[in-house]
Length: 336
Image (cartoon, rainbow, N blue to C red; front, side):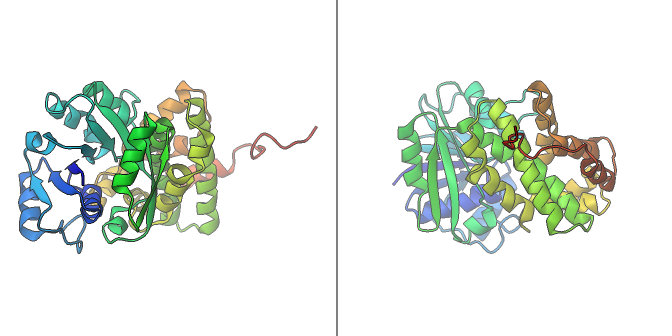
């Protein structure tokens, strides 16, 4: 049994608390919101973000960050990506050297272009940062539906230790040394999911979505490999796997926000309607900046940014994508 502190009581933090409690671990969960902690203690359910998922009486909830970090074998950082840095700043002085800190959020910081584990290591030097990612909606993990993820760490021993902590009959976990690729896949797929949702909102069909998923993973892989990620990561669970589920699922907040934009909502109106952090909106500018920094062509990401931040009509963005000049699919046709 491990002592695990989960920092963040949103849908993913709560879903993981159920999974890890069922695995026999001692679970504590922190939220910065006192009213959220009061609701969880009283209802034993997150009534707004994960309704219907009952929480065991011995899962402990607190708004005391010092209490949640003390004496834990593993800390799981489950706050939305825009709050990763500010939360880590609050944790300074509270975590020991060598403390395992697992990032489970997905995003890239706009101003610095840092991955989330980059931020953790910058703000909390001396910790042992890791990442868990994959096609894993909290709504399904909380209900015990079969799910598969990947855990990445700097060393094999840590990855295998975390693999055993998360592994269960309904949650299969693989290991990988490609932390950068895992995080880039998780962050960039949210931007493509906004495009897929927008296509749905415009009334386009399965052909359109298949094109966006396929060409989207091509964009993600081109950039990720230029930055040092491995090709197999982007064509695995944390690349194409996560992209498929986020582009297609009714649980996806990024797809839902995109759908509303396709229906004529502004970006601000769509985010207000979703009522949760739409991480693809926060990662879109960073993705475009990275594409320019590394000289990688990312036309879908470019058009998403124009729709989100420049007021471009969604149907015009799709038309521009379709009217791009003729190209080879992979650039390696074998022709002489």
